[in-house]
Length: 95
Length: 485
Image 1: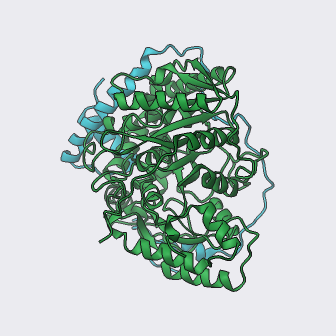
Image 2 (image 1 turned 60 degrees about the horizontal axis):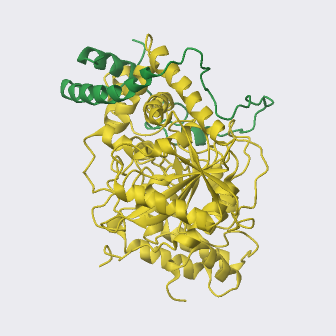
Image 3 (image 1 turned 180 degrees about the horizontal axis):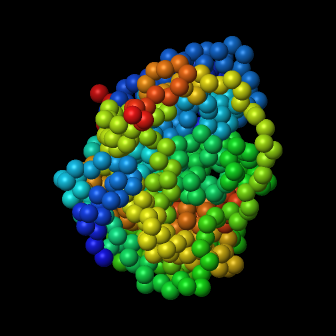
């Protein structure tokens, strides 16, 4: 299997990372060598193996649905990259 | 008191409890040495003046019943610290100041410790040499232009270079044990669920664990006792009976059964690693342990499995860095353009590579072939350990396939870099505890480590084995202070 430039562009779109042609080429090389290494897993027959989703083998606990942090708006917007007291500001979405 | 920075954590705690030294004196010494050690580039954020203030305050009303009374400690910059910049070694978090504290660091402050600063690491803990950090390479105190390992490279460098008496790192595939091995220090990766992940910048959530990095096993046990607590804020934190690891520490490991997995004798393993391992086996025997040959048949599949599972989880965890709510934002013509430019400019090359791998293996049409396959092989790897632990109490292996390498040596070959973690990754995949202890030197005089892997929740046992072997090995780290002018 080989990952071509078209696939790299597709993954970069899904990852929301812009990639120019030069970077795409480098990524294709790197990913191909990494996937060649990963292909080793195909040596194993795993049809009857259950996938491991958690090493702890305990089910997730439920907690009561209660408000624990109140009036923390200031804290929440504190690290906002664009200053606005009450909201997160993003580029215009609706024309 | 002279040579404060040369003292181990346990000695410092004893001296402060006996009022032979004050927190301020200790803190001053570590601040001074840290300031003289800028060339190591171990710190991302220094918090020295506030540390000195806190030390003075501690001395005014010292609570000497605490476990870390007035002890200054620098921590990996992956732990969120309230009101102190936390970067995860990334440009994308360069201006991020958390409004909350990670549970693990809070546990340390609750026992009287004082924050010295935040330590350099690979970007989002993705790397084995600390070369992926946005804040530059870290130097290994062992030799100039030698990598300290990664991802907890700044932490390892700071402990080995005596800039902090002890530290905490995180370990997703070897990020505590490999740098400990490269710097002649002790590093423990606890059982998954032992230390809370709350407030730790997430990399791969099913693998990440915080753990102590120290000059010796006893210090390591003491810090583990402090940081390991059940925490309802981490849904995978496990409520089990935790030992008082340092108090219960014993070098009596008579008749303990220690397994030697033949599959770790990998092709092309350098002779000095073979020799070190044999030496380790002999030391364990000298301590009265029984050596048993075991098999972990799926060992060679661990790294390929890891390089599906970890990037998949990372691609999902790192989706939050979109330039909207916090962190770096690039200018874009519209929302999507802003996202794409922010992530392209904000993440470094290795992080982008791993997000891409993760996105690919989770994408439509490839999920079963890669991600599901990897989860199944992960099960086989865990089964191997379960089977082995029917016969043995612990497993002894080398920590790494080689000693530390030079900065730049492996940077352009991701697969050869990934091979560094060949002996440590299986432990994360199975959620087990593992400890690396320094055990010898290679022909260049660089440190080499041995790893002891335990059953889940059996930290006490591997700490005891490490403690007993440490005594026999009697390792001396060769620190020449080459970076201090």
